[in-house]
Amino acid sequence: AVHSHNFDNPGFKGVSEIPLGLYINGQFVDGKDGRTHPVVNPSTGKEITKISVASPADIDVAVAAARKAFDTVWGLNTPGHIRAKLLAKLAGIMEDHADEMAAVEALDNGKTFFWAKNADISASIECIRYYSGWADKIQGKTIETTNAKFCYTRHEPIGVCGQIIPWNFPLLMLAWKVGPALATGNCIVLKPSEITPLSAQLFAKYAHEAGFPPGVINVVNGFGHDVGAAIAEHMDIDKVAFTGSTLVGRKIMEAAAKTNLKKVTLELGGKSPNIIFDDCDLEAAVDWAAFGIFWNHGQTCCAGSRIFVHAKIYDQFMEKFVAKAKQIKLGDPFHPETKQGPQVSEAQFDRIMGYIESGKADGATVHHGGERFGEEGYFISPTIFGDVHPDMKIVKEEIFGPVGVVIKFEDDEDVIRQANDTVYGLAAAVFSKNINRAIETAHKLKAGTAWINSTNMLHHAVPFGGFKSSGIGRELGEYALANYTEVKAVHIHL
Ligand code: NAD
Image (tube, rainbow, N blue to C red; front, side, top):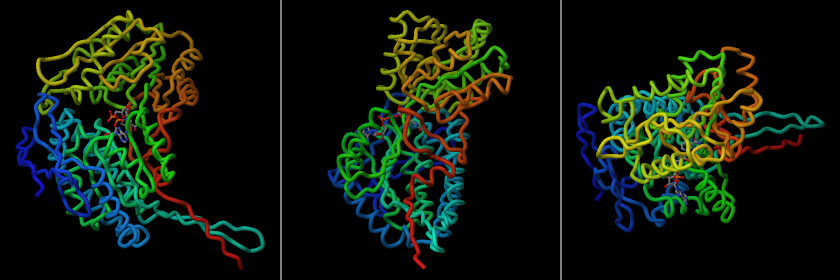
């Protein structure tokens, strides 16, 4: 018997009933060995409920269900327009429950209800709807070869895809993976983060309601070291798509290499540069820089965490940037005036505070924040460091919290060199009113995304992914379809 929980949330009127099991072969079930895991509200540090956790044996059952569905009712057995219809229906159901999903995300992750609703949930719905539009447009090419012979290509689904996602945008990272996988005809075994499993439960409930055949979508909760590893190592999973840390990304690739050489796509970490030239619109640059590092409490893979500011405007920028950070109201994620909630967990809180302490010990100047906020929960004041050195840990490593370093520069070529001096290459931003200077700089930055006069702008039709150690492959847009299809060339001999 699977338990469920009634959440009487302060953020919306009504009660949300959330299943708390594994969703396998069209049913919510308990894990085979009966284990559960506490779900904690990061605003209070208190447990809100317990959720069933899978064992590797449950993964075998989920994979077998996915394989059976792929070979019988999905994959090449369902025309694209049926997949399109189901995805569109799912997007509609999600839209009907947008407030409920946003409240669950705010409760489980700690992000504000406002942003959960207006970014995470709305973008997830748009993403699913966008890929519904692609489902009946997956086409190959005809290629003429010599002597009146020809060849055509088919873009076939890969098969059973394992999908492992992080806690920073629980539903949105799910949508980025599920949308293109289902549109192209794959079946999925998805593992949400053990830290934020609740919105994936609602997703499974709505997918069930939309009428996806049993086995097409499977959601397995659990930890990385056993459930995640079981997915990465599984001999009957054809592809694994992962979003998370670079460290775990390496383990996923290793597991794939040691088993069946399953296809691997990775969306990993970042330490994104944000270059602010002296000819920028300063007020706008300050606003965007704050959004770049403080949005989602800095728990954003593409966060603009290294802010390079031209020497001519450095003092002015710092003064305005600190004033901006002062205005950020921390507190209850459901309160309409709150701009920043807690970090997601005690472990993340400790990790970020460790980085802050290392910055102080290394001699960097704290211009704002640098401390815990409040007495309960995992709140950290927006933190700004100046007077940093390129070798400091706070400059080199991904902190994944509301901590930005501001670096003074004088020369365009030198700042590009410094910006590129990192193992990461996820995103970068440039601020200038001179379009030539801005575009030339954007082209020289080694990153999968370059924003001109903005930060953190994402859109379901635009590819997103990393250069260098920030990943392999692209999510979103037409580009993501290639991550979920195998190309078959059929030669015709006349
Ligand atoms: P994480 O790597 O610790 O965990 C991510 C997921 O992997 C979780 O579901 C976890 O359970 C699972 N996992 C952990 N160990 C595993 C193992 N050995 N085998 C298989 N799965 C395992 O990352 P996190 O702390 O959840 O998320 C933060 C990281 O994610 C940051 O580095 C951030 O930059 C990155 N991220 C990247 C993107 C992107 O699109 N590039 C987006 C969001 C987050």
